Length: 402
Image (cartoon, one colour):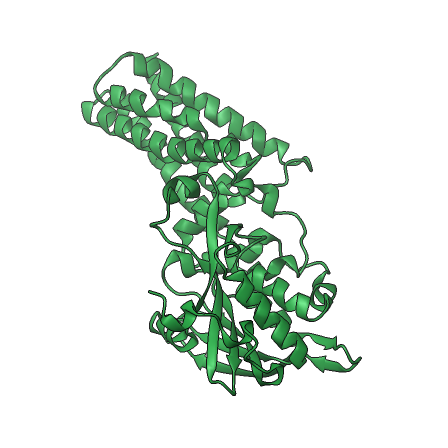
């Protein structure tokens, strides 16, 4: 619920606060176990030291109970809100989630502190608080980044509008790589849209990057005095036994290749077993075809839908449709038919696998061209050996039947 304190206007919004009594603090909250916390969080705290009033402004509010949440989420239309909360209660809640929390006090002139506080209070009004969320370009961190940049007359942008060391994909994987399965799925769904060069300013979609650049900024204030933006830093809570975020995530394609070769070899082996004429081999091979059709066809169908009919711009023009596409779902009924002894499945299953394999191999050759620049070697390493393994399995079957 919302406390009565945050329901009523803050003293700085109604002329009760003196500018010199205000303190502005940037709070950076590290990731925790739930997926929605993986990239961390950021917020601004305004405190009136004379009146002993404070508020934490949070641009990352959403609720699963909002109207049409699931449909909007599926279509890429995520409506978030900015809200205010009592700082200690909010910070303690995150501390109980085992999230490290660090605080940075901003060295702004009294006038700029009052301007920022008033702006934040205006942002939480019902007519202003809702915005269309974007993971990379309009989220809790970029909104706070823009507020701070406005307070220093654009000098944060000027200092960080230089090429970044990592692409958006590489920056994202710093936080997802410790979860290999989800990392694979997220990287599969996102296209070359996140593989181009970006600036350090753009990489501040990550709260940790915002904290780093705010902490290192030296700017010129309204009186022409050069001063660091952060006067003091402190740790509010240190999480226990949570792995640090790497500067660069390790590539996962070697284990993806190992998994793909293992699954592909299993397909070829089951195809050879089925070629010996036994019922057990045929049934297991049919079941394996069905499972492979689901494993490739369902993500491929989801990707096709997201890239064609939604606002998830990060999925547009995704090259992984050359590896896994909706046609793979044909393998599901055909695999069931094979397990049940259906004769037509012997004819059509290899056609589907040969087509999928050919498309994937041609795509692999085309990746030598600069137009195919998506960083999807993890998907290639995993899926291509599976396609080849099933094709080999049916080649063995056809040879035996001849």
